[in-house]
Image (cartoon, rainbow, N blue to C red; front, side, top):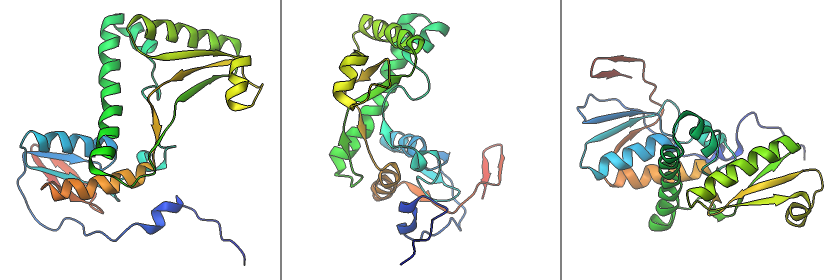
Length: 216
């Protein structure tokens, strides 16, 4: 048999049908976007007793969340050192605590609710392809240590023992990180939040925002 290449992410093919929003409503909080950020915001607002509605253009986890590697780590695009260049090291540490709190919130949801999303604990290796990159990692590692965060620096020899490659100058590792099927996480959290009374509408693009009124 011939395999036909797919032009979309494979696990999206199994998603269930969903009904779009077809009613008017009044809510305390309206959230546009049903990725991890939107669903996390909805969860927090629901905890505070707010009436919440989430409007997702396609389906929960269809955007950057579901198309990512699904590795949940504090350093995605900005490091602690990046923040320390704009703020004091102490304030950068507060931001880093906030980011790590988000990582732990996702883990807590998976464990508390028994979400079926291929949860796999694993440390994060940031690989250095040049000596200058390894120097940046060394500075990041020092800053993390100053504030009591856990990380580890590897030279090329030590790294080879972990990844079986001599193609890098070294690495920095973050502990307490993990991988998930982020699309499945969003779909599972959608069902959990709906059971708690959060209105979540997929296939519902927002077309206009006027004062406190959203049109779909």
